[in-house]
Image (cartoon, rainbow, N blue to C red; front, side, top):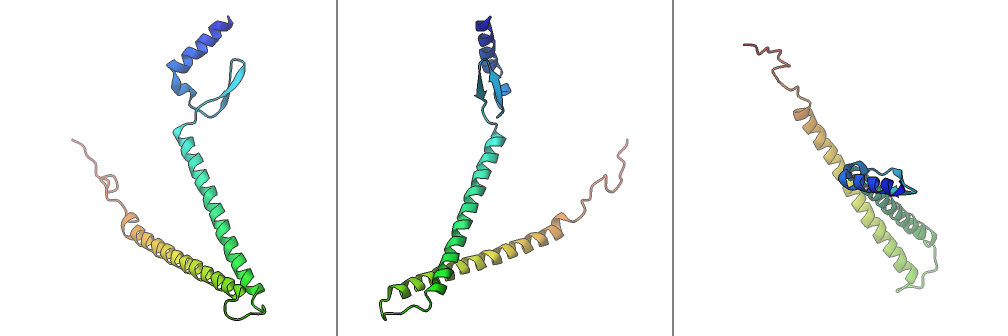
Length: 143
């Protein structure tokens, strides 16, 4: 009897593979088997990973900006040794980082604003216009 159950389950798995394409865990004889993910679930997992990576990169960028600004504020009144002062060089690097990232952020905000404005204009002129169809004109096609 036990061998028949195994053979039946084995045949079903290979004769009907579409029945085994879900992520739920189903009892399979004495143990549990995780069934293969569908394409939609794989895409959702990929997008989730991308969002997580983007969030981590944003957090790192914000930390760099915060620590650069904090270093400049803390070391602004240091005792300078003159030319070749390592603290002044570090302050200069922090200022460069802030200027570069600030320029990139301003450029991104301007690009995003232009993009939103452009799509709004396109929507207003092309997609918001009512579609002229025979149904909207209430034309009856009868012979």
